[in-house]
Amino acid sequence: MSLLEWIGESYNPGPVGSVTTRRERRARKRGVAIFTGIVALGVLAIPYLLVLDAVPEPAGVLVLMSLGLGLYLITGYFVRLRPDTSNLGWFGGLMDNPFRYSDDINRLLLLFALLLLPGRLVATGVVDLITALRRPAAAV
Image (cartoon, rainbow, N blue to C red; front, top):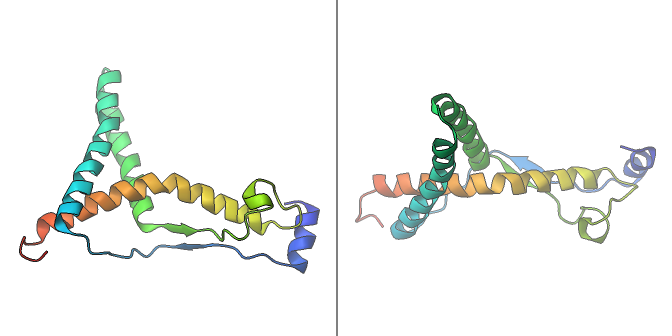
């Protein structure tokens, strides 16, 4: 944070996004939930197939990869990052606002939201598949 940002932010603070950990549940049709779950499981299988093909003794690597992937999916599923897109800097975030550091926070929130997006999509597909398989077929 530069001196200009510190002075400018104390004079005219900008809006900052939010971080929430609540998960909103939406009801999906059974067929859609099963399809997205199968696609999510297929996406999850790709790193495992690559490790099995590339590593001669993959047991330890698979355990560590499973722990890391599980943590990533849990984080992507539960953590919601919502940057305030009206304060991303000048020219829609292409240039840093030298008088505010709140735009730096919003750009960082946007970056982490984009990094967690694949994990959220895959985790949501798997959870929807489990929910659809546990629910009776008549309760569509």
